[in-house]
Length: 303
Ligand code: ZN
View 1 (tube, rainbow, N blue to C red):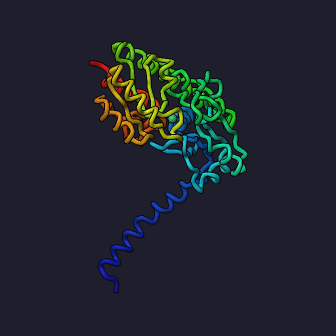
View 2: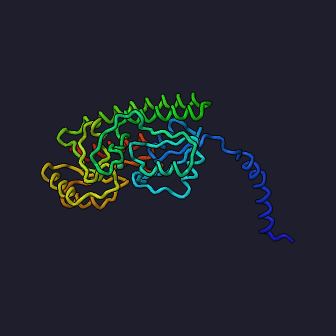
View 3: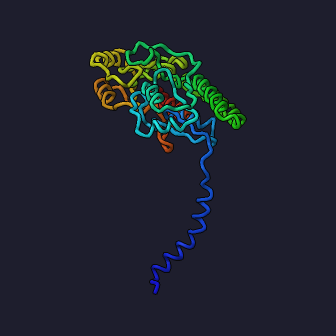
């Protein structure tokens, strides 16, 4: 005899059977273009251009530090299965060349910074002698988008029109963003346009928009700041009354906490320098990241 409980189980099973079949039927093999992006910022730019046409995998996710990433066991397989791989280049992903080689991938590999006017760096940890943080100048992000659009169209010619339309709309949004950043910096009193960050991630921002950044760590997070560099910055903050120091989402907070304590400088909101936040955070996309950072600068530096 069936117990009441068993009857219920049978009813539930019967009710879910057609739904389960429907689900199985909908799971056709994924024929979307498999694309790998090395880290969250480039991944967002790829997503803006490709929409849902591709199956996108990101190696270094939100709040992750692409300078010092150790590839995960599955990464080699992800590269092997990809048709297109998009990296930043300019030495950001020093671990990438070996990973590409060991994966044996046949994918097209595109550096999104191709054609960007690269800043030279004296930092001994700058791979290849360049500053990789080109995305901090919005006009460089437009170069990334053009490279990504062209790479997607050649890997998936059937999608060309979609990629071109998405890229055109997004490039317009980046033009508007660039104007927003310029207006925000113009509203900060000139004598207060100085900022301390942990590592030197805003060189392109400084060159494009005119805020001055000082950092105890170089353009990579690989090496710790030396005691001498930290002492120099503490002296500089005291002598020049630099109003605020900032933490970054990819850096160890202890150094900035110490500098703030010893100088009395205010600690501004956390900056997103090298990685986006998760989707529910304040910097879930590239555009949201730039807006968040510029709002943080404005709040800390305005009187
Ligand atoms: Zn960095």
